[in-house]
Amino acid sequence: MGTKIKALILFCPLVSLLFALGCAGKWNRDEVRHRIADAYGAQKFDQIEQLQYTFNAQIGAKQIRRSWVWHPHTNQVVFQGTAAEGGTITYRRSELTTQPSAQMEKVDAWFINDQYWLLFPLHLAWDTNTQVEASCDPHPLPIGQGQARRIAVSYPQTGGYTPGDVYELFVGEDDRLVQWIYRRGGAPEPTRMSTWEDHRQVGPLTLSMDHRGPDENFRVWFTDVAVKLAGQEDWIRAQ
Image 1 (tube, rainbow, N blue to C red):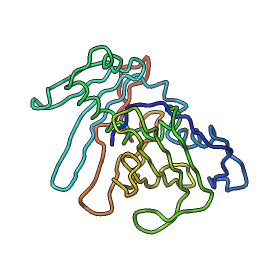
Image 2: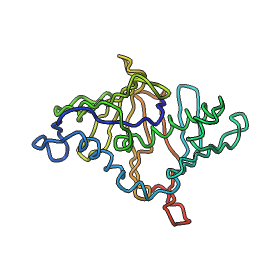
Image 3: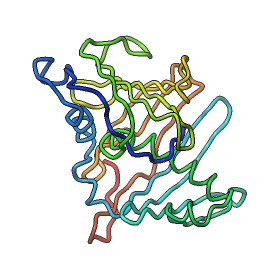
């Protein structure tokens, strides 16, 4: 699942959504995306000078662990990998277009994948070239019992590491993601589905730390999550 940070315009007319206030109100395309993004702290993200996290994944018998430090204002990325992965690699994402290398592109694809798992709700406010479809009617959750509002986010067919990706978001009354379905390249069958659990406060952000699939063969979770605010020396760790 990795999509290059592509900008996203939510391209749909006025959409009526059943959020915390019910379906009585009309929500235009900006309100749809910002309502969810703001539930995760998007309005205060500019306070973040550095964000660190470790991405952990279990896919069948395979275990993945990757640690990152991201400087959002300069878009500098620090990858703290094993010797086999190239050790510690520091780069600016703007350099990928001027100094491309196979190693850098591989690491950057990992970075985008891992960052999307952590920060996808914020991308609803950041990205600028997707289509969004939203339904007022509750939909059955893809995993387990229950229902939630469904919002489909579709990326363009060109650009990025995996163009045409589609995300189906199942949103609770607190405007936070409950579960999602990921369709790589817009595939008709789900590529991945998982929960969004263990929401924690990390400075001004609210982030989901745990994502579980429909069985024990898939899980993504985050450890060592912390932010450093502009002008401050101390890290604020997930609470």
